[in-house]
Image 1 (spheres, rainbow, N blue to C red):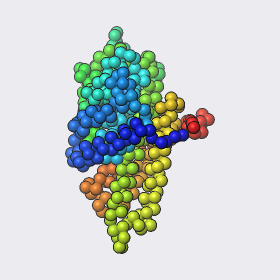
Image 2: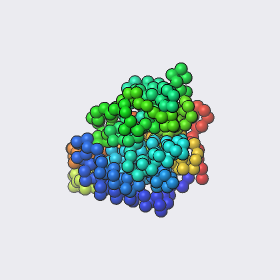
Image 3: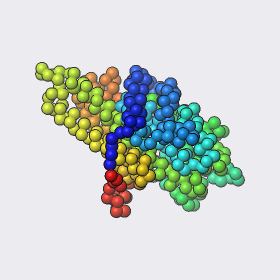
Image 4: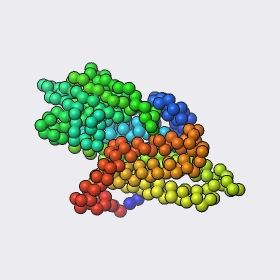
Length: 388
């Protein structure tokens, strides 16, 4: 496997790094403290093409590969995970879901709006009583003539307060279990769509996470994605791609914390020399560098498998599982290296530590990732595909 980035991928990485450092860093602490949605920053991300990176140019996107997407996600996540999750949902779940599984009319109607950032998308799967068990959908979309009548509640919806389009999973044929679930494109301007209060979260506080309520929303039949009853399968396939996005977010959080800890350790002196020269700190930095690099290789492998059209489900789960654990473990270490300064907001690492936790939870908890990996193993797939 060749992990050498191409000139185009290096250019994307450099552009994302410059944007993160110049545009996101100055206000990131204020946005976190006040739960302020980064509206202007998202607009600038859209101008740079970060909201429709993998969308075909035919539909107004950048036409980039998954590797370009993950290197951009890493750089932005080093600074502001709230912005990177907005970017991740729009790219990995919504745009990819429509382009991969939508019909031509759906692509023509919605992808240009999403890729340009004129519209932001949300992916609505979780419910108050249904998180990891996505087979149990209480939200219903019952067929009535030429439309479906949508009723129910969705929880933990990223971009919930600002999105113009929802991809909603709902049960249309309860007697068929998860084979009766459909996926729908729901415009938030339609009558009956209600947005709950913004959640007050531990981390990624600037991103807007809401409960969404649907009350007798009339969804045209042509807004169903795929064939009747294909919604559950659609959601699981799309989450595989989403996990690559979250794995790259976790990687960025860990790498950002490591860079801050390294810089601090080289400047801070104790007992007559920089603390980086004390073995206790040097070994922490060595462990951080090693595990972050291992996480990066897992993320890159999953991205390359996706780009080559190979099965990447197991690789995506491995990348997300490992990268999210690395993010949690080494943001804690970064706080420890900073000592008392790590406990205050000015030095950023406490925020990265809070942001890291969600990567072990959303788009499939770490427990679900282990379940996915175990299922592949028990089917005889001991490792993800390898190519040379």
